[in-house]
Image (cartoon, rainbow over all chains, first blue to last red; front, side):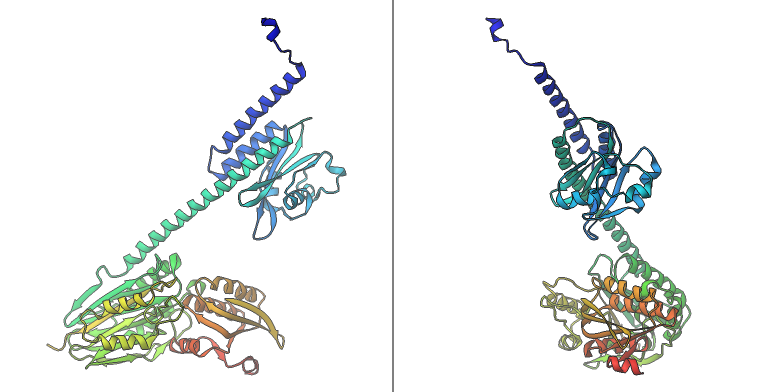
Length: 432
Length: 109
């Protein structure tokens, strides 16, 4: 009975089965390698190294498909000779349809070339540039979930037989892993950028006055500064250039982000230095203008600098291309556009000073363009007239600034981007 | 924002339409730097269809102007819409940039 149940298996079949099992092991092994890392460079090198060994090949390369240029670029090349690899990575790109890899990328089908020298599809340009001689070649498309990722090439292999189907299967796995690694790399870069912005935001805040309130004699100052982005372009500063005087600076840097934060840091420190001991704003802006003239990328600053005498209420102000301010006094709201020079940091210029005498209870609202440039969801801007009207209607409000901020935020509800806004309120308590 | 580059009496004209802001000014910058690289002697910017320009847009033109000044090139703005003209004049940018009513004005003055 026992002998009857034995099935005789031909040796050939057994051999085939063994090979299949062997391949399955290789497949599992490579799949493990593929899923072992999120690091793109490590991933590519591991896979290529293993493939090169498995296929007894002289070189392996991966060309990445660059969507923006619609070209293939060498991303990784593993060769016996390092200089060939370096050359490949630096200089060689292929058009779609150009050479073997270009054909594979276009048709999304593998190509096997047994004799490169006699195959017209082979682009010898790469060999000519690198000095590498391609004898045979297997090129496979790397297609992930998002489409073409690139082309993998196995060059000068010494295997008499191999399993193309399995190579294709591995390429599919590999392409998905590359996609994941790219996503991972992007998320790390995003995180890094986010952290840099956070640092820039802290740096920027560190250059604003420690407290948004300041008072000296009969003058009290308060500021509200809201940044739309993490790092905004508005700034303000309160200083005492000499005893009995208070200086208020409000400004708007062109641009936002890390560059604006660094530029602001320079502006505030240059300003504090230039404003020391100066009792007129004109020479301060003049000095700041020349300090900023070598600003990068055309960056500039619009600003108003006002110096108020804490005992007499006499004020002097200069403007550098900054929007007008509002002067609330005697029940009236006046829009004051000072004679002004151009924004700071563009061209050599003078910045004339204007004098004003504040009366008891007068208030001055200095602000940046985010106040009247606020945009609503249908894209129209609030405008200066609206701001003036709102200020007139809320003239007696103690928290006028807070109301103005609420007003523009209500207006901008649902709008996709908001601007930075800064308001500095100067209150003159009156002669003692 | 859209940019169209044309030529008028042999001079390059860069016509912009839409909003020139933080998001769109890098594209404008690329074009301006190309003109600077070629040492374009006169570049006209046609503002007729510009609906808005923010400080990053203006900074991009300041960079362009400074770059052209190095080799003696001229940057001229033409046909600035009223609202943008107001911004330019209150910000005293009319002292920084050369502004003309039309391309013909810019070429003959």
